[in-house]
Length: 241
Image 1: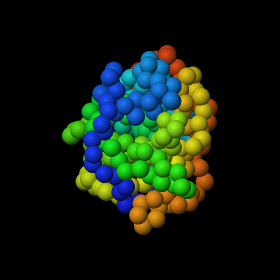
Image 2 (image 1 turned 180 degrees about the vertical axis):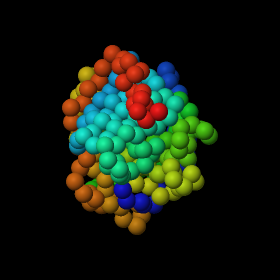
Image 3 (image 1 turned 135 degrees about the vertical axis):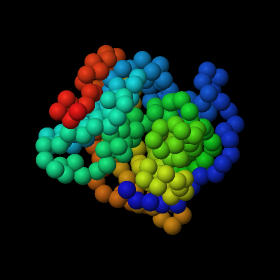
Image 4 (image 1 turned 90 degrees about the vertical axis):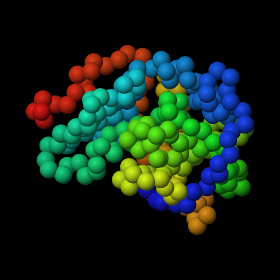
């Protein structure tokens, strides 16, 4: 994931949706992607990323990732990992367990509690201007409250098109260096419009996207259900206790 300069400004959004404490434009983005009612009524989300199967309890945010050589998850209290052989999983489980859930569940994760909104400077790509909404977090929200995000959307359709984000998990310090993902490939999953693939982009010296960093990350076999899985599905395996 490439690091780039920030492309945000700090002006408060002028209009707020009357039914929710969201900027009017973000409420329109939620509506375009299927609506918050569908999202809030859903209980379980799953999708595949390569050989990994990601399963999330949308109410508690418990997670489980299964793959041929390892499994890991969050049981509501702690992150656990189970490997068939040492170093089968090469990332940081605490950082990774909900990383792709967050990227996949765009833009709906920005309806969570404890979020602050600001207007951001438009993103211009190939001559088209995308309005932006900056998302930040109140203190002590999540494991990386200093993370910032900017959602860029199509001004004609309100469909999400880009995501800029910072990474502060390791440094625990605010950052003005952004990464950039393009969202231009979508699926309809039980009433919600969720990404079929996402693509990281290289950025120029001003923080504007230029060309893809590499192949798109693809999501397959996505399921959204109003049925809750048993809590035991997310439990830490007994042989790890």
